[in-house]
Structure formats: structure tokens, C-alpha cells
Image 1 (cartoon, rainbow, N blue to C red):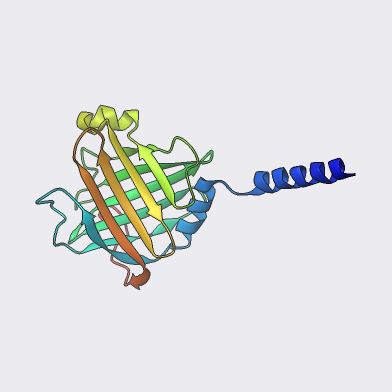
Image 2 (cartoon, one colour):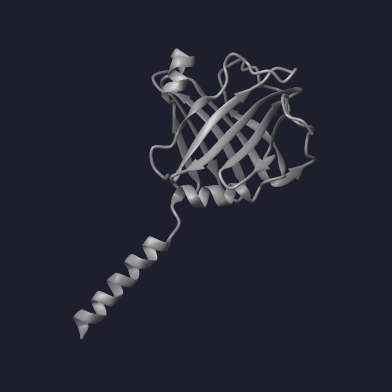
Length: 187
């Protein structure tokens, strides 16, 4: 009887684990909770004389559907950047959509990477993909990562093999007014 109870306990544990959502799925669900909201950020790590220093930094979780989340990232009056996250096959892809003020694509756009595993509910890492390497050779060894918890969202970049580290952290406890559309997007 003890063996049967032990077997039932093990099977129950395995079934519970199989039904638990992956880190990527939990991360995705938590990020979608912020859809339609905007937050102000601070530069928490950047190279000396970084172009973002001293400017208002805003993220707007503007558009969400089952598989895509678009997050415009504004630096002062510059509305050229949008983080595009795509969820597919238990992996998340991060791409950087860069636009000119007239809405046309920048020559350096849609670079990024895809997670190599399902990650954690509060951390997803994106090593540079081949498209990025082909587009921006020096970015071949970039690794981006996003952290997400109840209080903050951080976007990070490390260029492996160099001192380059960039982090902007957004306070998720205080929403701000939604900005107008990013360049290349209609209201």
C-alpha cells in the first residue's frame, strides 16, 4: 500500500509539473497585463556620454495580441524605436523596429534575437541572431535581456567581450499618460 501511495504522489507531482506554464508563457502573460499602459524610466547603466542621458524615457505597451506585443520606447522627442516581442513555440523573439520621423524604415532595423529556452517568468534573454550579425557585424555578440516583476521592467544590452552595458529601468508602480503614436504608426 505504501508503494501505491508513493507512486500516486510521484504521478500527481509529475502531472502538476506538466500542467505548470513555462517561464516564457508566464513572462508573456505578466507583460500583457501592462497592455495599454505607459511608464517612465531611468537610465541605470550606460556608457559615458550616452545619447539617452538627461532625456525623458518612456515605454508604452501599446499593442498586444496573442503572439505579438509592440512597445514603443521614446527618448525625449525621438519616437523612432519600438520593441517588438513575438511569442511562438514557447520562445520569445525581440526585434528593434527603427523608423524615421516620416515613418520610413531606418537602414538599421529589425535586429535582435530569440530566447534559446523558455527562460524564467521574470527574465528573458535574447542573444543576437544571424539577421543581426548580417546587418550589424559588431553586434554579433550582443545579448539583450528583459526583467519583469510587479514593480519594474528593465531593458538591458551587454556587448559580450566589451565593457558596453546599457540598462533602462521603468517603474511599473506609476502609470503615466499615454504618448502619441511612434513614428510610422497611425493613431
